[in-house]
Length: 275
Image 1 (cartoon, helix red, strand yellow):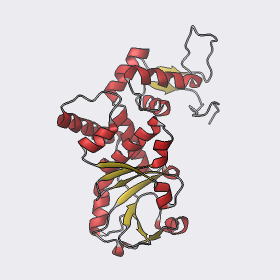
Image 2 (cartoon, rainbow, N blue to C red):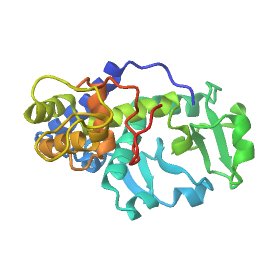
Image 3 (cartoon, rainbow, N blue to C red):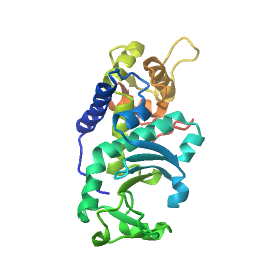
Image 4 (spheres, rainbow, N blue to C red):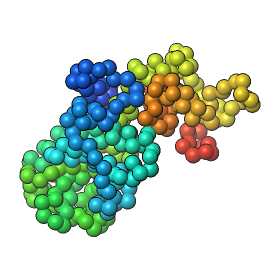
């Protein structure tokens, strides 16, 4: 699904707007951990649920789906079964990003039936037409058995449009936009900067080394090897308990609070290798 380019500031403002609207409706100040489920249901007035999306769509890497006309956000049941709160909440926030940033594009495609670069999928059973985001028409006809490609002129206005998210498409622009929205929603900049300053002061942490130059518990050396500790300290200090350390370190880097000056990537595995 092709989407217009959006600046980070625009996406961040959209996430802040969702938080502001929720606070206005509930008369409560949002503090970390950001209650993303309540924001979806009470703030945006959407339905929220779990389903076996991977079985239904016959795709083994589906994480969530946003059903625009049904006003529903659905997450694959496996995320709840794995009891990974960070991954689950980020997926909720990611789908919220699709609702806020992309639903009008879906509505327009449903209304006009125009091409617009969207993939149209029709289930083999009638009345189950939907809008999906992450495949080309050519690829989709060969990769799934439960859907057939639908030509633009057969995409009917009355049918439900939806966006579904796959792990394999994480780097596509529409998914990056939803990911960035999720990080801004779950880790608001003001709250995160405040937590970081309480832990490490007003200056950014500069990572000059891959491994620590010190041995023992007395000194803490900010280095690539210690990124889980850096992220964990800020996470706990700020109350971001429904955010993973991985999401936290990415957000800290994006805000310039942690700067990696080495040639090494911050690996999510135990080893730290050069990219």
